[in-house]
Length: 356
Image: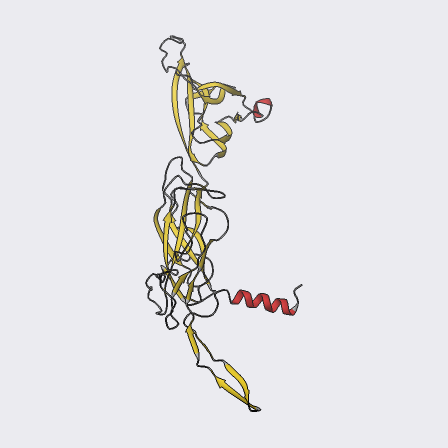
Protein backbone atom coordinates (compact mmCIF):
# COMPACT_ATOMS: atom_id res chain seq x y z
CA UNK A 1 0.00 0.00 0.00
CA UNK A 2 1.36 3.45 -0.96
CA UNK A 3 2.08 5.93 1.76
CA UNK A 4 0.26 9.24 1.55
CA UNK A 5 3.43 10.98 0.37
CA UNK A 6 4.13 8.30 -2.24
CA UNK A 7 0.55 8.42 -3.48
CA UNK A 8 0.70 12.19 -3.87
CA UNK A 9 4.02 11.90 -5.70
CA UNK A 10 2.69 9.23 -8.07
CA UNK A 11 -0.45 11.21 -8.82
CA UNK A 12 1.50 14.39 -9.44
CA UNK A 13 3.89 12.67 -11.85
CA UNK A 14 1.06 11.21 -13.94
CA UNK A 15 -0.88 14.45 -14.07
CA UNK A 16 2.16 16.48 -15.13
CA UNK A 17 3.42 14.22 -17.93
CA UNK A 18 3.22 17.07 -20.44
CA UNK A 19 4.89 19.61 -18.13
CA UNK A 20 4.45 23.35 -17.87
CA UNK A 21 2.10 24.72 -20.51
CA UNK A 22 3.75 26.08 -23.64
CA UNK A 23 3.70 29.88 -23.83
CA UNK A 24 3.81 30.27 -20.07
CA UNK A 25 5.91 33.29 -19.17
CA UNK A 26 8.41 32.49 -16.45
CA UNK A 27 10.01 35.52 -14.82
CA UNK A 28 12.18 36.07 -11.78
CA UNK A 29 14.51 38.56 -10.25
CA UNK A 30 17.50 38.18 -7.98
CA UNK A 31 18.64 40.28 -5.09
CA UNK A 32 21.99 41.02 -3.55
CA UNK A 33 22.51 42.04 0.06
CA UNK A 34 25.64 43.80 1.26
CA UNK A 35 26.87 45.94 4.14
CA UNK A 36 28.38 49.41 3.87
CA UNK A 37 29.56 51.16 7.00
CA UNK A 38 27.59 48.80 9.15
CA UNK A 39 24.42 49.41 7.19
CA UNK A 40 22.80 46.55 5.28
CA UNK A 41 21.87 47.35 1.72
CA UNK A 42 19.85 45.41 -0.87
CA UNK A 43 19.85 45.71 -4.65
CA UNK A 44 17.47 44.03 -7.12
CA UNK A 45 18.43 42.65 -10.49
CA UNK A 46 16.46 43.17 -13.63
CA UNK A 47 13.68 40.65 -14.31
CA UNK A 48 14.71 37.74 -16.54
CA UNK A 49 11.78 36.41 -18.54
CA UNK A 50 11.34 33.59 -21.02
CA UNK A 51 8.45 31.72 -22.64
CA UNK A 52 8.12 27.95 -22.20
CA UNK A 53 8.55 26.26 -25.58
CA UNK A 54 6.17 23.65 -26.98
CA UNK A 55 7.42 20.08 -26.40
CA UNK A 56 5.39 18.05 -28.88
CA UNK A 57 4.81 14.46 -27.83
CA UNK A 58 2.09 11.86 -28.26
CA UNK A 59 1.41 8.14 -28.17
CA UNK A 60 -0.82 6.02 -30.37
CA UNK A 61 -1.74 2.56 -29.09
CA UNK A 62 -3.92 -0.27 -30.32
CA UNK A 63 -6.77 -1.20 -27.98
CA UNK A 64 -7.38 -4.86 -27.21
CA UNK A 65 -4.04 -6.46 -28.03
CA UNK A 66 -5.44 -8.94 -30.59
CA UNK A 67 -6.60 -9.00 -34.18
CA UNK A 68 -10.19 -7.97 -34.90
CA UNK A 69 -12.18 -11.06 -35.89
CA UNK A 70 -14.34 -10.54 -38.97
CA UNK A 71 -16.02 -12.37 -41.86
CA UNK A 72 -15.90 -12.32 -45.65
CA UNK A 73 -18.12 -9.58 -47.06
CA UNK A 74 -18.63 -7.85 -43.69
CA UNK A 75 -19.09 -4.06 -43.74
CA UNK A 76 -18.18 -1.32 -41.27
CA UNK A 77 -15.72 -3.48 -39.34
CA UNK A 78 -13.95 -1.64 -36.52
CA UNK A 79 -10.42 -1.57 -35.16
CA UNK A 80 -9.81 0.61 -32.11
CA UNK A 81 -6.92 2.86 -31.07
CA UNK A 82 -6.12 5.42 -28.39
CA UNK A 83 -4.30 8.70 -28.95
CA UNK A 84 -2.77 10.48 -25.95
CA UNK A 85 -1.55 14.07 -26.03
CA UNK A 86 1.72 14.34 -24.12
CA UNK A 87 2.43 17.83 -25.46
CA UNK A 88 2.52 20.69 -22.97
CA UNK A 89 -0.33 22.39 -24.80
CA UNK A 90 -3.78 21.77 -26.23
CA UNK A 91 -3.41 20.11 -29.62
CA UNK A 92 -5.37 19.06 -32.68
CA UNK A 93 -4.30 15.81 -34.31
CA UNK A 94 -4.58 14.92 -37.98
CA UNK A 95 -5.64 11.27 -38.36
CA UNK A 96 -4.62 9.08 -41.29
CA UNK A 97 -5.61 5.41 -41.65
CA UNK A 98 -3.52 3.23 -43.94
CA UNK A 99 -2.73 -0.38 -44.70
CA UNK A 100 0.68 -1.98 -44.35
CA UNK A 101 1.95 -5.03 -46.25
CA UNK A 102 3.88 -6.36 -43.27
CA UNK A 103 4.03 -9.29 -40.87
CA UNK A 104 3.65 -8.57 -37.16
CA UNK A 105 3.59 -10.82 -34.08
CA UNK A 106 0.08 -11.34 -32.67
CA UNK A 107 -1.48 -9.72 -35.74
CA UNK A 108 -0.36 -11.98 -38.61
CA UNK A 109 0.81 -11.40 -42.17
CA UNK A 110 -1.07 -8.97 -44.38
CA UNK A 111 -2.51 -10.74 -47.45
CA UNK A 112 -5.60 -8.82 -48.54
CA UNK A 113 -6.76 -5.21 -48.84
CA UNK A 114 -9.76 -3.82 -47.00
CA UNK A 115 -11.99 -1.34 -48.82
CA UNK A 116 -13.70 1.94 -47.92
CA UNK A 117 -11.30 2.58 -45.03
CA UNK A 118 -12.32 5.55 -42.85
CA UNK A 119 -11.32 7.05 -39.50
CA UNK A 120 -13.58 8.47 -36.78
CA UNK A 121 -13.13 9.91 -33.29
CA UNK A 122 -15.13 8.58 -30.33
CA UNK A 123 -17.38 11.56 -29.66
CA UNK A 124 -19.16 10.35 -26.51
CA UNK A 125 -16.25 8.55 -24.85
CA UNK A 126 -17.99 5.17 -24.63
CA UNK A 127 -15.19 3.31 -26.43
CA UNK A 128 -17.62 1.87 -28.99
CA UNK A 129 -18.05 3.00 -32.58
CA UNK A 130 -21.51 4.49 -33.06
CA UNK A 131 -22.31 5.05 -36.73
CA UNK A 132 -23.86 8.44 -37.32
CA UNK A 133 -22.71 9.66 -33.91
CA UNK A 134 -18.94 9.33 -34.17
CA UNK A 135 -18.44 11.47 -37.26
CA UNK A 136 -15.38 13.62 -36.48
CA UNK A 137 -12.38 12.73 -38.62
CA UNK A 138 -9.72 14.65 -36.64
CA UNK A 139 -8.99 15.16 -32.95
CA UNK A 140 -10.07 18.61 -31.91
CA UNK A 141 -8.59 20.55 -28.98
CA UNK A 142 -7.20 17.61 -26.99
CA UNK A 143 -5.92 18.80 -23.63
CA UNK A 144 -2.44 18.00 -22.36
CA UNK A 145 -2.26 14.51 -20.79
CA UNK A 146 -5.73 13.66 -22.17
CA UNK A 147 -6.57 10.64 -24.33
CA UNK A 148 -9.26 9.90 -26.88
CA UNK A 149 -10.41 6.73 -28.67
CA UNK A 150 -10.17 6.57 -32.46
CA UNK A 151 -11.73 3.99 -34.79
CA UNK A 152 -10.67 2.71 -38.20
CA UNK A 153 -13.76 1.46 -40.01
CA UNK A 154 -13.48 -0.65 -43.19
CA UNK A 155 -15.23 -3.23 -45.36
CA UNK A 156 -13.99 -6.80 -45.91
CA UNK A 157 -13.96 -8.08 -49.52
CA UNK A 158 -14.47 -11.66 -50.64
CA UNK A 159 -10.89 -12.59 -51.47
CA UNK A 160 -10.25 -16.32 -51.82
CA UNK A 161 -7.53 -17.66 -49.54
CA UNK A 162 -6.97 -14.37 -47.71
CA UNK A 163 -7.36 -13.95 -43.98
CA UNK A 164 -5.35 -10.97 -42.58
CA UNK A 165 -5.37 -7.25 -43.35
CA UNK A 166 -3.00 -5.14 -41.26
CA UNK A 167 -3.99 -1.51 -40.86
CA UNK A 168 -2.39 1.34 -38.96
CA UNK A 169 -3.43 4.69 -37.55
CA UNK A 170 -1.13 7.70 -37.86
CA UNK A 171 -1.80 10.71 -35.63
CA UNK A 172 0.07 13.92 -36.48
CA UNK A 173 0.29 16.87 -34.10
CA UNK A 174 -1.46 19.97 -35.40
CA UNK A 175 -2.09 23.47 -34.09
CA UNK A 176 -4.86 23.80 -31.56
CA UNK A 177 -6.69 26.87 -30.38
CA UNK A 178 -9.70 27.04 -32.70
CA UNK A 179 -12.49 24.63 -31.78
CA UNK A 180 -14.22 22.90 -34.66
CA UNK A 181 -11.44 23.54 -37.16
CA UNK A 182 -8.56 21.20 -37.91
CA UNK A 183 -5.32 23.04 -37.28
CA UNK A 184 -2.35 22.93 -39.61
CA UNK A 185 0.31 20.30 -39.03
CA UNK A 186 3.03 21.56 -36.69
CA UNK A 187 6.51 22.19 -38.03
CA UNK A 188 9.45 21.83 -35.68
CA UNK A 189 11.69 24.83 -35.11
CA UNK A 190 15.01 24.30 -36.85
CA UNK A 191 17.75 22.89 -34.66
CA UNK A 192 20.01 25.51 -36.21
CA UNK A 193 17.91 28.29 -34.68
CA UNK A 194 19.05 29.61 -31.30
CA UNK A 195 16.41 29.74 -28.58
CA UNK A 196 14.66 33.06 -28.18
CA UNK A 197 13.17 33.89 -24.77
CA UNK A 198 10.30 35.75 -26.45
CA UNK A 199 9.32 33.03 -28.92
CA UNK A 200 7.51 29.73 -28.35
CA UNK A 201 9.61 27.26 -30.31
CA UNK A 202 8.27 23.88 -31.39
CA UNK A 203 10.34 20.86 -30.38
CA UNK A 204 9.32 17.36 -31.49
CA UNK A 205 9.94 14.88 -28.66
CA UNK A 206 8.02 11.77 -29.75
CA UNK A 207 9.83 8.44 -29.53
CA UNK A 208 10.31 5.98 -32.39
CA UNK A 209 7.67 3.30 -32.79
CA UNK A 210 8.22 -0.34 -33.68
CA UNK A 211 7.74 0.06 -37.44
CA UNK A 212 7.52 2.98 -39.91
CA UNK A 213 7.39 5.46 -37.03
CA UNK A 214 10.63 7.47 -36.74
CA UNK A 215 11.46 9.51 -33.67
CA UNK A 216 10.89 13.26 -33.41
CA UNK A 217 8.60 13.69 -36.43
CA UNK A 218 5.48 14.87 -34.58
CA UNK A 219 3.65 11.67 -35.46
CA UNK A 220 2.69 8.43 -33.76
CA UNK A 221 1.61 5.14 -35.33
CA UNK A 222 0.02 1.93 -34.10
CA UNK A 223 -1.08 -1.24 -35.88
CA UNK A 224 -4.10 -3.51 -35.74
CA UNK A 225 -5.46 -6.18 -38.06
CA UNK A 226 -8.64 -7.71 -39.37
CA UNK A 227 -8.61 -11.51 -39.33
CA UNK A 228 -11.22 -13.41 -41.30
CA UNK A 229 -12.43 -16.31 -39.19
CA UNK A 230 -14.87 -17.85 -41.66
CA UNK A 231 -14.46 -20.47 -44.37
CA UNK A 232 -15.83 -20.29 -47.92
CA UNK A 233 -17.07 -23.82 -48.57
CA UNK A 234 -18.62 -24.98 -51.83
CA UNK A 235 -19.70 -28.34 -53.19
CA UNK A 236 -20.20 -29.94 -56.60
CA UNK A 237 -22.17 -33.08 -57.41
CA UNK A 238 -22.05 -35.50 -60.32
CA UNK A 239 -24.01 -38.63 -61.22
CA UNK A 240 -22.28 -41.40 -63.20
CA UNK A 241 -23.81 -44.63 -64.53
CA UNK A 242 -21.58 -47.47 -63.29
CA UNK A 243 -23.38 -50.45 -64.79
CA UNK A 244 -26.72 -51.64 -66.12
CA UNK A 245 -28.29 -55.13 -66.36
CA UNK A 246 -27.85 -55.38 -70.13
CA UNK A 247 -24.58 -53.65 -71.00
CA UNK A 248 -22.93 -54.32 -67.65
CA UNK A 249 -19.95 -51.97 -67.49
CA UNK A 250 -19.61 -51.21 -71.21
CA UNK A 251 -21.13 -47.82 -71.89
CA UNK A 252 -23.94 -48.51 -69.41
CA UNK A 253 -27.21 -46.59 -69.55
CA UNK A 254 -29.48 -45.28 -66.78
CA UNK A 255 -32.18 -47.91 -67.25
CA UNK A 256 -34.10 -49.63 -64.46
CA UNK A 257 -31.69 -51.78 -62.51
CA UNK A 258 -28.69 -49.61 -63.42
CA UNK A 259 -26.23 -48.58 -60.70
CA UNK A 260 -25.64 -44.82 -60.38
CA UNK A 261 -22.75 -43.38 -58.38
CA UNK A 262 -23.22 -39.91 -56.92
CA UNK A 263 -20.01 -38.01 -56.20
CA UNK A 264 -20.01 -35.01 -53.86
CA UNK A 265 -16.83 -32.94 -53.78
CA UNK A 266 -16.51 -30.23 -51.12
CA UNK A 267 -13.85 -27.48 -51.24
CA UNK A 268 -12.83 -24.77 -48.80
CA UNK A 269 -11.49 -21.58 -50.39
CA UNK A 270 -10.60 -20.29 -46.93
CA UNK A 271 -9.30 -18.44 -45.26
CA UNK A 272 -10.38 -20.33 -42.14
CA UNK A 273 -10.48 -24.09 -41.65
CA UNK A 274 -13.97 -25.55 -41.75
CA UNK A 275 -14.83 -27.88 -38.87
CA UNK A 276 -17.78 -30.18 -38.30
CA UNK A 277 -18.59 -30.26 -42.03
CA UNK A 278 -21.59 -32.46 -42.87
CA UNK A 279 -22.61 -33.37 -46.42
CA UNK A 280 -26.27 -34.38 -46.67
CA UNK A 281 -27.91 -35.82 -49.78
CA UNK A 282 -31.47 -37.13 -49.84
CA UNK A 283 -31.75 -40.26 -52.00
CA UNK A 284 -34.00 -39.21 -54.90
CA UNK A 285 -37.34 -40.79 -55.68
CA UNK A 286 -37.09 -43.54 -58.29
CA UNK A 287 -33.85 -44.90 -56.84
CA UNK A 288 -32.81 -47.15 -53.96
CA UNK A 289 -29.70 -46.60 -51.84
CA UNK A 290 -27.16 -49.44 -51.99
CA UNK A 291 -26.32 -50.34 -48.40
CA UNK A 292 -22.81 -49.54 -47.14
CA UNK A 293 -21.79 -47.93 -50.43
CA UNK A 294 -20.63 -44.64 -48.91
CA UNK A 295 -16.93 -43.89 -49.35
CA UNK A 296 -15.21 -40.67 -48.19
CA UNK A 297 -11.68 -39.47 -48.94
CA UNK A 298 -9.47 -37.37 -51.14
CA UNK A 299 -10.78 -36.73 -54.66
CA UNK A 300 -9.81 -39.45 -57.11
CA UNK A 301 -8.31 -39.39 -60.58
CA UNK A 302 -9.18 -40.89 -63.96
CA UNK A 303 -12.89 -40.79 -63.27
CA UNK A 304 -12.78 -42.19 -59.73
CA UNK A 305 -14.71 -40.14 -57.16
CA UNK A 306 -12.37 -40.89 -54.24
CA UNK A 307 -8.77 -41.99 -53.96
CA UNK A 308 -8.13 -44.66 -51.31
CA UNK A 309 -11.13 -43.39 -49.41
CA UNK A 310 -12.65 -44.67 -46.18
CA UNK A 311 -15.68 -46.97 -46.51
CA UNK A 312 -18.43 -45.92 -44.13
CA UNK A 313 -21.29 -48.17 -43.06
CA UNK A 314 -24.85 -46.98 -42.63
CA UNK A 315 -24.93 -46.51 -38.86
CA UNK A 316 -23.29 -43.83 -36.72
CA UNK A 317 -21.12 -46.08 -34.56
CA UNK A 318 -18.28 -48.53 -34.98
CA UNK A 319 -14.67 -48.46 -36.08
CA UNK A 320 -15.48 -46.64 -39.32
CA UNK A 321 -16.52 -43.59 -37.28
CA UNK A 322 -13.10 -43.23 -35.62
CA UNK A 323 -11.23 -42.14 -38.77
CA UNK A 324 -11.18 -38.50 -39.94
CA UNK A 325 -14.48 -39.10 -41.72
CA UNK A 326 -17.80 -40.63 -40.81
CA UNK A 327 -21.05 -41.46 -42.55
CA UNK A 328 -24.55 -42.81 -42.21
CA UNK A 329 -27.85 -43.50 -43.95
CA UNK A 330 -31.10 -43.03 -42.05
CA UNK A 331 -33.44 -44.47 -44.65
CA UNK A 332 -33.88 -41.26 -46.61
CA UNK A 333 -30.66 -39.23 -46.44
CA UNK A 334 -26.99 -40.09 -46.86
CA UNK A 335 -24.60 -38.09 -44.67
CA UNK A 336 -20.83 -37.78 -44.79
CA UNK A 337 -19.05 -36.19 -41.81
CA UNK A 338 -15.73 -34.38 -42.23
CA UNK A 339 -14.15 -33.33 -38.96
CA UNK A 340 -11.85 -30.72 -40.52
CA UNK A 341 -11.74 -29.26 -44.02
CA UNK A 342 -8.56 -27.34 -44.74
CA UNK A 343 -8.08 -24.54 -47.24
CA UNK A 344 -7.73 -25.88 -50.79
CA UNK A 345 -7.80 -29.48 -49.49
CA UNK A 346 -11.00 -30.90 -51.04
CA UNK A 347 -12.73 -34.05 -49.83
CA UNK A 348 -15.05 -36.27 -51.89
CA UNK A 349 -17.88 -38.57 -50.85
CA UNK A 350 -19.32 -41.26 -53.13
CA UNK A 351 -22.42 -43.43 -52.69
CA UNK A 352 -24.46 -45.59 -55.03
CA UNK A 353 -28.11 -46.15 -55.84
CA UNK A 354 -30.01 -48.42 -58.23
CA UNK A 355 -32.63 -47.12 -60.60
CA UNK A 356 -36.02 -48.58 -59.65
